[in-house]
Length: 420
Image 1 (cartoon, rainbow, N blue to C red):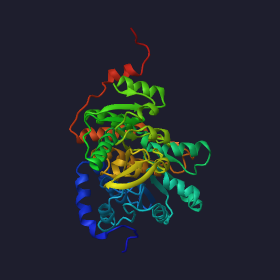
Image 2 (cartoon, rainbow, N blue to C red):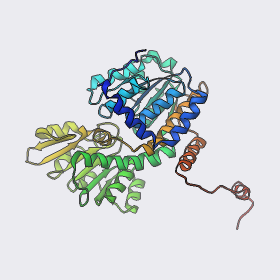
Image 3 (cartoon, rainbow, N blue to C red):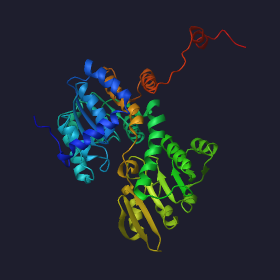
Image 4 (cartoon, helix red, strand yellow):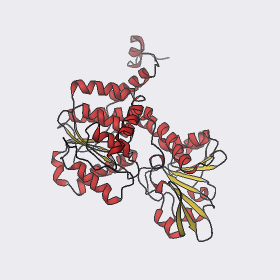
């Protein structure tokens, strides 16, 4: 049977298989879920569209959903994040339709989303809410058949909550990003390591001694700031939230407005989920040789139009590094086209943290499928007991044992009679 697909090169499948198997070694929680799903088939016959970064880790999630019985189609959630060998393996070894090509242009990116929607999904799985947006804008005819969805990212959850607040959201969504076993680990440890990995692979610069400006001190910003400091950088944090700014100060980082940090930074990393965090005035203040990278979901955090308008010329000087020559002779460098640098210039998060994130995705899909008809058209969080079960499975896989409450301790915590 021919598997519907649009991929770069089918001959890469064998390399993709080997890399998918390598990632699977670091994903024991998802493996356990896949074994159960294979027996119970909780998603049997359910049509799913997954818009995710097409990486080795995502491949293991896709195989898990397939083994659960889902009729799955996969497309990319970023034009630069697709690993073409993985896409080829999913199609030709695992029989999963994939519509994704590394470096695809904007028109192809959205064509692929439409192709992934052609079978009329009952469940959606998003990383940035692009499938939800396309459904609501262009394919409203498919909305009555959609039972629910899941969302992976902070940026996507922000978009979806705005839709729910406006009464525009047409079906319930589980905010996977809000699970502790996602944002505390994937966002902090995964983003922290993979972002610095992407910057180093793109530039091969020494981080030690550099001033790294981290825009945003959410869980992703915390991770990048921590890893940059660990590599010997002087770290500056910019924030708009006074509580997060205070936390950054207490964590030992310098905190200042971007207007002040712009003249000091050697490397800038944006992780806010907002637009024009690095704006025209900041670009004008940057010193010669400054490098800009983004690790937020969309390429909107660095004002690319202002950067182009201020420059007299540009050239690609290394893979994933573009040099912009300013009118005053300064040279500024943009990494990964301003897209997610950890996926544009590297391989994304390590499999060990995606193990928990994709366990949340798999169990989130199962949960929302079982709740069909009971949920309102809004954004939900995955039940706390599911989150804790993922953590327990991860600890078990790591051979880490923990304490359990005794009956006496449980009674004490649920009573009010005892005091000083």
